[in-house]
Image 1 (cartoon, rainbow, N blue to C red):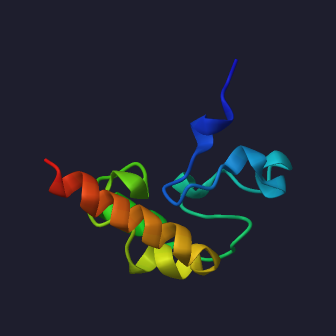
Image 2 (image 1 turned 90 degrees about the horizontal axis):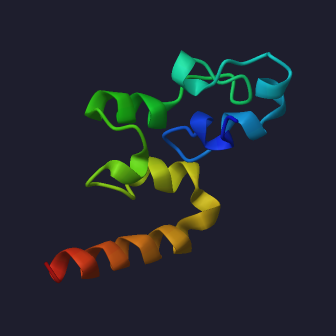
Length: 91
């Protein structure tokens, strides 16, 4: 049985939850194009350039790209950033 998370993108979206993917109009952002966004994806391109599968794997997460993409979730990203500082400072 396949998991929905096999299609987890660098930004955290899950292709298999998207109607474009379900209707066969998109092969997922890792294929180079997102049917829902209809544009290039700077988050995907950044993750690929840095050799990361997901943004959260990056030492710079959350970064300005994630803040721009998830502008409605800036408080959540701030919380992640503060927790990351706390955990890294404890090492």
